[in-house]
Length: 308
Image 1: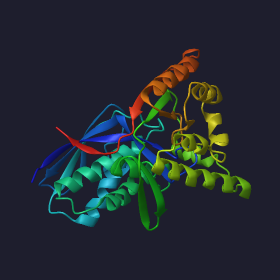
Image 2 (image 1 turned 180 degrees about the horizontal axis):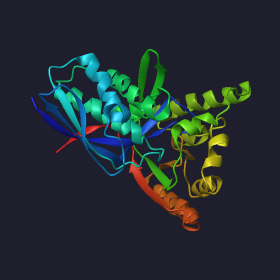
Image 3 (image 1 turned 120 degrees about the vertical axis):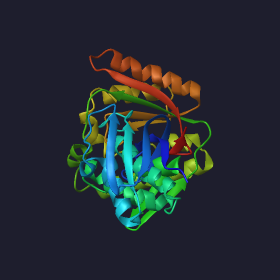
Image 4 (image 1 turned 30 degrees about the vertical axis):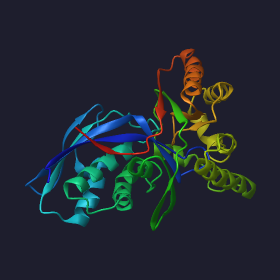
């Protein structure tokens, strides 16, 4: 059995417009790399971090907290070292903390001979995710572990459903270089919502899940509507309305905030429309003094993976 493993832990999009805290999908073109290594000395140590200034203290790092949760359950006769090559900017809205949490538990599980299934790994990773967002939710974690689209039916007990991915679906994601903390983005949300809005939102969730199962792109378009969270969170993202309008004019099936922002995602039918949407979204921010990154990604149906 191996004593060291290098993994690619992918970025993810959570909420997917109408599915606040329950829906997510996995990206193919962005992610962190991590190295997990068995040691004779017991315990969890973070030995190297590259890319962003993150804490080395195990109990203050998302990857460390998730690893500790699994370690205390497994009680292995060894320890682990974690190296983090951080490529996903913290606070970007595409699952940076989730990638760290998922990476540590996935790597440890592989080195221990896979005693835990994907749902159990998600449970341990939730403990790390809670450090970043101040709440235990799995809408970024689940797609990173399972791949493709996922729906978190319940967190207590944890119940995750995999949803099929239509073959022509591409995501375009723009990341304006500002930071929005997940915990702060949750604080601005209303504690109560009108019943008519709740009914409309869960109808959109149901129809989106159905549309993904039958690859109905027109229904995907009609379902990607967020009338509960977006009206509040969009005020944190400069030029959001202009970006969304331009993306939809360019042919996007839908456009919404990725996670808690500031990244904005679109889903598109086909690579050519995804490219057109990329150009349209870029044009908006190119006229401002806000730096941005933008990329196109196929939906990653594998999720986290081992690399050489």
